[in-house]
Length: 175
Image (cartoon, rainbow, N blue to C red; front, side):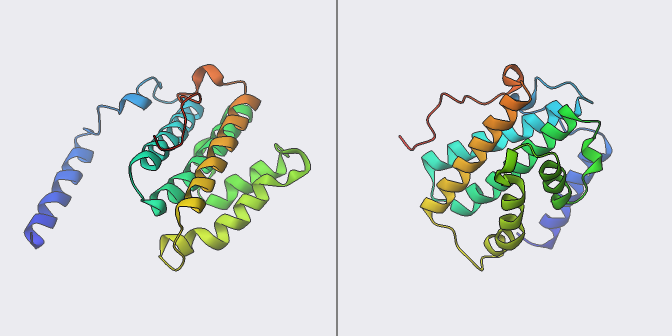
């Protein structure tokens, strides 16, 4: 493993992108039609939550569970915004824009959920990412549970159960 291996790997990725050879799409995202912006965000949220479920069963990779949970929350919010408003995913170039728009729409009544999650994200996400704080099992599971609950709430609010790819009846607890 040396610099030539790094360059070869980089060239392979560049070539695939240049040739538009990024597929086939993973099974959990294959039902989406290209250009269906809301369903793409929904599918990404479902896929991330599914990965969290798998990680909870098989590893102690708590940092990945926390990061994927944050991502799933944001994708769930973005799905809602694109599905229920005139917004497009490209309208949200910064994380806080998604949370601000969700908060402004009062999706969670007077509980301030979006603002509270965004404040937490802004303060703590980078601390976990850069290993300044290290999440343990209990925190990782709590973050995943939060992401699952937000996702279910948003999907129900948007009446999109039939398009959600999550197996919500599946237990997230390790077997």
